[in-house]
Length: 99
Image 1 (cartoon, helix red, strand yellow):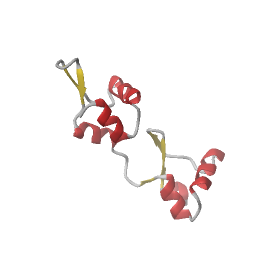
Image 2 (tube, rainbow, N blue to C red):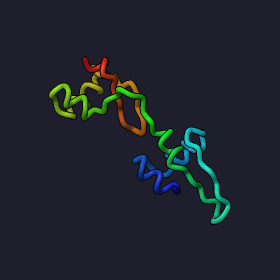
Image 3 (cartoon, rainbow, N blue to C red):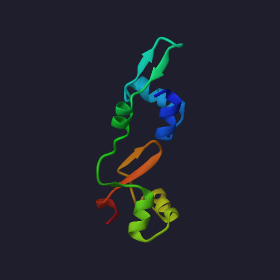
């Protein structure tokens, strides 16, 4: 797939995707025709986007705690809840952190 398709699938900008390719975090190949087009395989994109198991999104934390998503966001801002991982501008929390 091309850069535009991959960025839509990841939910990030093409500029961000180029940075990940340049840093070597995402494998990509360059086709010299047409015009040095960059291609990314679905397997390479999946390998990059794979998250560790047992991580929860803020929506899942809100559901488990019985609070709103805005409450979870406030907890993060106040330091009461610390994300275990931030990936593509999204916070992920461990199950142990919310108990």
